[in-house]
Image 1 (cartoon, rainbow, N blue to C red):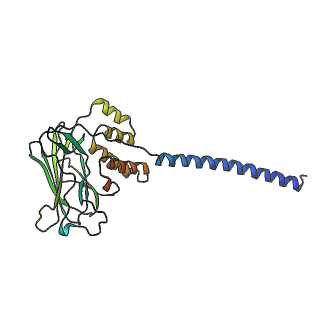
Image 2: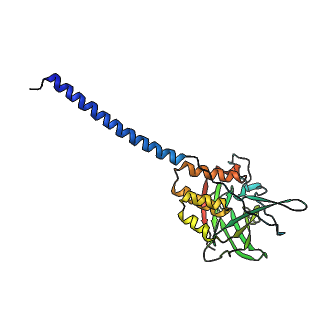
Length: 271
C-alpha cells in the first residue's frame, strides 16, 4: 500500500513537471508570436531615386494648386495646406539661366495610376486631361468627387488610351466647384512610359512584394512604386512597416504635409 504522504508527493511532482512542460511550450509560442510581431513592425526603408530628366523646353508642371476660393473651401479642414496637391516628386534641372523644377515621374505601365490629395466638397467636378508631347489631347474625362478630404487615385481605362513606350505625356487635373464650371484650381505634371530590361523583370519575378516596391523606387519608377505600395497596404492593413514606408516615401519627395492623409477613393476612369 502506498502511503498517503508518498502519493501526495508523487502527485505534486507530476503537477510540477506538467506545469514546467506547459510553461516551456507557452514560452516558445509566446516567443514565436513576438518574433512575428517584431518582423511585422520591423523598420524597413524604401529609397526613391528620381530619374534623370532633360529640359525639353516644355512647361515644368505645378505640383501644388494655388488654393481654393469662396464656396470651394472646406471649413472643417484643420490643416492649413493646399486643397489640391499632386503626389509627385519634383526634379530639379540646372539650366544656363536658372533652375527648372519638373513635376515628373516614370512608369512601366500602359494604363498607370495617378495620385492626388483633394480637399473639396462632395460633387465638385474633376477634369483630367492627358496630352502627348506635341500637345495633342489623347484622353479626357470628367467626374464628380464622392469623397471630400483625402488622397484619391485615378487609373486610366484600358479601352480608351494606351501609353506608348518611350514617350512622355503631359497631364492636367482641374477642380470645378462653382455653378459656371470654371476651374477653381489645377495641377499639372508629366509621365513617361519606359521599357524594363530582362534583368529588371527577372528581379521583380524573384522578389517578395515589399522587395518589388523597393526595386521600382530605386529605379525611379514613381507611379509604379506608389501604386504597388498602395496595393500592399490594402492586402496587409495591419502591417505597420508598410504604412511607415508609405509615409516615409511621401516625405522623401517633400510631401510631409499630406504623408499621414488617408486614401479615401480609388477611381477607375471609364470614359
